[in-house]
Image (cartoon, rainbow, N blue to C red):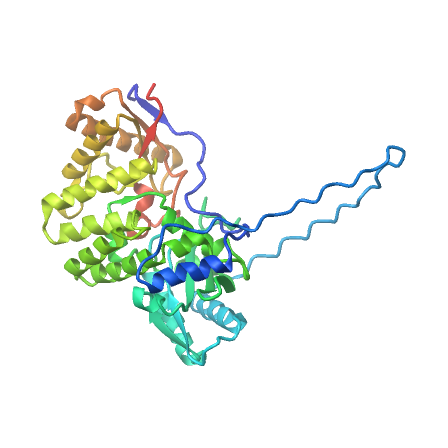
Length: 448
């Protein structure tokens, strides 16, 4: 074992927000109307109102020393409601959609517009065949059972109407309803918000059988080379999972709506093979107030790669690495041969690894940080073997970086986390859980 290697101990909390919790809403209706007014003008300002309502704390009344305060009985905490039963994919989509539209207040217009902000995995932010299928089924249910609504794509133009919107997450969870450990079901959360009032107006949840959903990522997410926690994704998840009916829509979500609409169009163009159009849309999204986000940088790199613009693609990958280092965490999807510590030999997957290593080494040297390189595996196989394999793979990436940039020697440390920090956790060992077999790069204070 290398002197600069360290076995990771203890399970870190999985990325992404919790599946429960009704945190306090932020902002007021005035903020909502101001934000959507800016959207109607074709842009979103990065300035937001900070005059939040102040909580007035009453001062305690004085009590005479001779009169001790009376004991105040503490009410018993209400038991937590039982989780919804695990049902089939089709039943869950139908039940949740009907619950949301049936409980939403009547729309002012006879033919109200509703847009669907593409659903995502609540931990990774990925879109998949499952989330796309959910959106298609929701649109079909609206058309057949809620004809007072017309469904439109989320675009800068459709947002000018200040429509109602749907946002949702579809996340694998364990028996304790957390995105950790052995996943046993999917948690489906769907909310409806009203951009005119700035409120969440309906919400419903369900648990879905794990075997029912095809969680294969869409092309753009499957091809994306890196992953990190992203504030835009966190805002989306919090707006869905962290809000309850009547809460204000999160200001961070409002700030990112224009960028989200452009990125959604760009993702569709990339998935359809229209790479030049995708590149133009990602470029436009980058110029918005919320354009400094992972999906934009991944999209720019992927589009340039597909267009054969090698030099510019290398620069775009460098921007990706810079973004990850700024966020203090960067997961790189290096693919290894099964049971091996060598990169996959298929040029389709590993053809760009030399450039990736070069750009990572260059950026780390320039940033003058110490780098922890942590290998991860899926839960398949014995835990001890996974720990060893994850460490060996981290050490292999470490050696590749140091071969490219000798200045990194003594400035990196390798660690193995095995399968203790899975982001997906389904153990399928295919394209659906590739992020569980990642190598993470994290700036740290010291390599001693």
